[in-house]
Structures are given as C-alpha cells and as structure tokens.
Amino acid sequence: MIAQMETMAQTVARARAVFNSGVSRPVAWRREQLHALNRMLVERQGEIAAALEADLGKHASESWLTEIGFLTAEIAHTLKHLKRWLAPEASAVPVALAPAAAKIVLEPLGVVLVIGPWNYPIQLLLAPVIGALAAGNTVVAKPSELAPASSAVLARLVPEYLPDAVRIVQGGVAETTELLEQRFDHIFYTGNGRVGRIVMAAAAKHLTPVTLELGGKSPTYVDDTTDLEVAAARIAWGKFMNAGQTCVAPDYVLGTAEVLDRLAALLPAAIERFYGVDPKSSGEYGRIIHEGAFARLTALLEDDDVELVTGGAADAAQKYLAPTVVRAGADSKVMQEEIFGPILPLVAVDGLEDAIGFITARDKPLALYVFSEDAAVRQAFTERTSSGALAFGVPAAHLLVPGLPFGGVGESGMGRYHGRHSLRTFSHPKAVLDKPMKPDTMVLVYPPFGALRNQIIRRLVAPAARIRRRGKA
Image 1 (cartoon, rainbow, N blue to C red):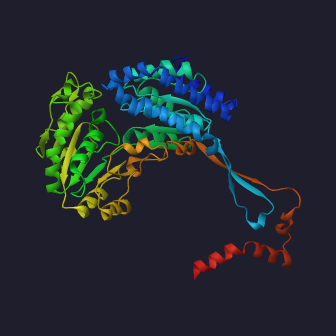
Image 2: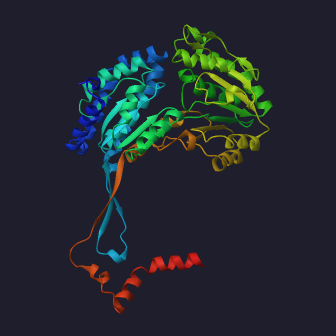
Image 3: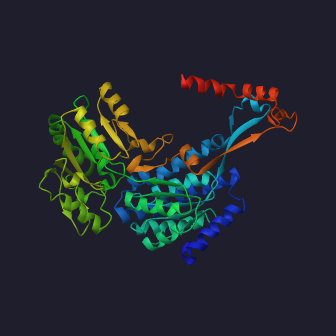
C-alpha cells in the first residue's frame, strides 16, 4: 500500500507496528532489507536514471556516479562491516564494583523520518535510509516534490522491494507539515537552514533528536604552489556537476589577484573540455530544477559588482544556465547567499591570512577546499578554520570515502552519517552492567556507615579524590 492512501498518523502507526513487532531487530532482517534495496537500485537503474534526467537533466553516468552507484557502494560497505559495527563494546569496571561486567550495545531507535531534497533526490533520501535500516529501524521517507519524476519512481519501487521496512510519503509543504506533527524517534532532514529551523522546532515538541544536513557557501582557496591547470579542472568538475546544484560544490574561490588571473584563463578551457563549445547541447550538462531557481540565479548576474569571465548564457524555456565564472566583490549579491547553481565567483584576497579571516568571519561551511602544496598553508586551514569537511586538492570527493563522516557544523548542519556514522546516528548506545549476585560485595557500601565502612568507602573512591586534589592544586 502506498502511504498516500492513508493518513499521516496511520502511516506512522503502521511503521511503528512493524517496529514494535520486533521483526526489524534481528541482523538477518536488516541485511535482507539492504539486499532488497540494492536489488532495486541495480534492477531498476534505468527507470531511476530516466527520472533523474527528467528532473535535472542528469546524464546516466553522472547519475550512477553520484546517486545510484554511490548508494550501492554505501550498501556494500555497510553489509561488509555491519556485524563488527554491531558487536557490543566492552567497558572497564572500577574496582569498587568488581566483580562485574559492563558493555555498550547499540539498539534501534524505532521509527525514523527522512525528508529528502531535490538536488540529489535519490541519493540524499536513500543514503540515510541505509543507515536507519542497518540500525534496525523502520522508516517513513518523504522525497522532494520539486523532483516529481524521482519522487514518483521512489513511490512506485520502494513498496515493491521494501514493503514493510520503508513507507514513502509524497506531497508538498502541507504533507511535510502534517508529517512533522507526528511523533518519531529520529528526524533526518536534508535541505536549507530556514526549513531546518522549522523541522527542529517541530521535533522539539516531542523531544525528538534531529540530524540536519544543510549547506552554506563552501569556500575554495588556491595559491601559486599548486598545479593551476589541474586545480581548474577539478574545481570546474566539482562546481558544475549537476549544474552546480550540489550542497558541497565550491561556492566561491579565494586567491590573490595574480593567482585568480591565471585561474580565470584556465577555467574556460576546463569547462569546454567537459561540456564542449556549447554546453547547452551537451548531454552531460544538467538543468536548473525550476523556474524560480533559474530566475534567482540569473538575477545574481545582473549585479554591477560582478564581472563576467566566461559563460552567462541563459535560456528560461529550457531552464539552462551555462557554466559561468565571474569576478566578484566581497559585498556583491552573489556572495550574500549560497549560490546553488552554476555560477563560480572569483574573489581576490591579499593572501593566506586574508583568506582565513574572510572565511572565519562568515558562517561555518559544509565543506572547505584548499589547493596548496605548502605544508604550512595546509596546517593553517586545518587548525584555524572550522567546516563540516576539509579537503586538499579536490572538491566533493570526500563523499566517496565510506569511512568519513558527512555533516555540517553550525549553520551548515548538525549530526553525521555515512557508514558506521549512520549506524551510530540511528542507534541508541545503551549501557549494560551485569554484577553477579554472589559474592555480594555491595555490602561494603550499604548503611549503616560505621568507622570501618566509612574508611572502606573513602578508599574505594580514592582515585576520584586524588583527581580533585590535583585539580585544586
């Protein structure tokens, strides 16, 4: 049954009934769901790729790299390590409680709500679902209405492959609002900060924990110690993939005027290498998601504080905006908000110190990219900046490393996922203590507290007392 035939309360109740039945707790069930999801992605990849092309103009190879294949790799990594990740973690027991054993076990939270975005409508909805299922939860998943073809294919395929584990809810703002009125055990939202605040406020009513994967202006710093030709190609790849509609795309580039002059001369060649002389006719270059986003992006180019380097061609009927590079001032409109489109501003700074000051004066970004072979520069960015991720020499590729956590900090989000980090996000680490009934050493701390027992208690907690004394000293 597709969730739209039910009320939101009924949808959540059915997901909770499956969880409460205990069927999702065995590791065998979790593995079955992951295998089923993998089969869906492989067997129906043609339908999924067609939906992505309809929504975003994605080439099938890009869809495999960034969505379908990305997810199958995440599933494979999770299946390979799941047993080890779920193994109880032993914890040392103080002498005062001996004999006893202590451990931490990961238990599923219950029913998880996943709200996905439109820019990677398959990957960014299903990647959290992988972690939630691996942790033994059931899921209610809400794909973005702004990617209607992808939402429809998910609503059609997921019930076929995961009939008990995941329920898909389609719809827009009204349906999302109604969903957020229900009680969940965790809410995972990917999108913008404005809606993230709404999600967090709704979750607070039920004291529901949240993971917010947001975004922001991810900076790139380039200096003259790097290979600028390679840097130009990698920056262009990370920026113009998915027509710039990527949360970890390089949002702008910082460098000295001299470095930016050289980079500006190299970027057009990199763009032509990827998409040809006319990217509009390239089957490998995407489209803007809708008319509103297209209008917002083209308006950014009308600022007097922006100088066109390359690109700028636009076709409203096709929602096409060419890969565009501009020189921009720090106070220009294009520097006031996350661009989320194929416009790359080059912003001149005096050097390393100026660049770090520029970045730290703004909200903490989801990602930060540095192109420098200078060890001191790399160390400075590592130690003196804060971002969800820091990558040297390549943008966006850190998402392809399954062992790395993905998430923001501050305005760019809270919480982490991917691989083992997903399992921990969607689990409760439960403390378990087991103390045998015999011998009953607890008699040492039972009242009444005579002189001997008082002395024993003081000796048992002596390590803590010594720490306190050292702290005062």
